[in-house]
Structure formats: structure tokens, C-alpha cells
Length: 199
Image (cartoon, rainbow, N blue to C red; front, side):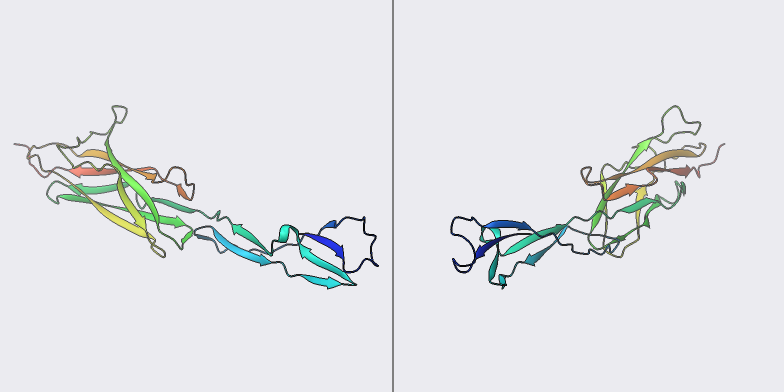
């Protein structure tokens, strides 16, 4: 804090001596609550006082200092499994996203979306629109204290006998400018087992 020191009477200082600026730093101890939250503010009040005939006041007539605590805590999220099994007869696949590390005091949103497997995979790929209903930018919002969210993906029965097919589910941060969320496992697989018999 910078304070201006000025004489109370001309007897203490010569009239031609300007106010003197004294820098007096102090520290405020902050506690890390390990929770993801919004930035918080507090105010330090500067109180006028006198000591040994010297009046102490804040510079520029400002009586308070506004401080911001920037939250740097993060949460780590991932799929609960590396593979989810489903069947055409079941009609849907249930996938779960979990918080592996960290606590929330504000809502945090992630997004999930599906994709067909590429030709580089040795697995038989399922096709969106034929074998399952694609998800595009599906949002999941974790509320304070919530550690898991499950969602369903529709599975289609094409009535064709075939081997087990697979597709991918991806996980990403909804707000790419916010590094609060750490994605530990960006993708998982869903297996679709056909219940149609070969003749």
C-alpha cells in the first residue's frame, strides 16, 4: 500500500517539502479449497490514522483496495470404462462419464459425440444412421457434488446377421478457452452385438 505523509502543522516539516510516498507491503494468506469455482473478490480497507503527529492517508484518496482470487483448481474427467457392450435387441447403449479427481462448487459442462471407426482399426466398424444414432455435441453438465453422469445412445436393429460391430464415443471440454476440465480419457468404444442368426 502507498500512503502519503504530510505534516499536521508547519512546525513539523518545512512548507516546501512535498508529501513523501512510503511503500508498505503486506500479505494476505489465501486458502486453497481444492474446489472448481468462480473467481472471488475481497476488499482491503485503508483506514486513515496518525502517528507521532503525522497524518497517514491512502494515495489518490482511495480508501479501499479490491483484490481478486483467481481460481486455478481443476477437475479430471473420463469415461468409466474403455469398452461398453450393447446389443441390437437392447436398443441402446449406456455410457458413463465420471469425475476422477477434483471437486465442484459450480456447474461444469463437457460434451460427448460419436464417430465411426477408421479403417486403421482391426475392429468391424458400425455405421452411424444404420447401426446407431449419432450424437453431435451432446452436453453433460456436472453439478456441485455430482461425480458421474450416464447417457444412452440408441442402437438400431438392421435385421441382418453380422459380427459384432464397434463405434467410438468421444469426450471433450465444452468451453475450449477454459482449462478447468482435464480430459483423462478422450474416447471409448461401444460394441454392438447382433442378435440376428445366420441361416
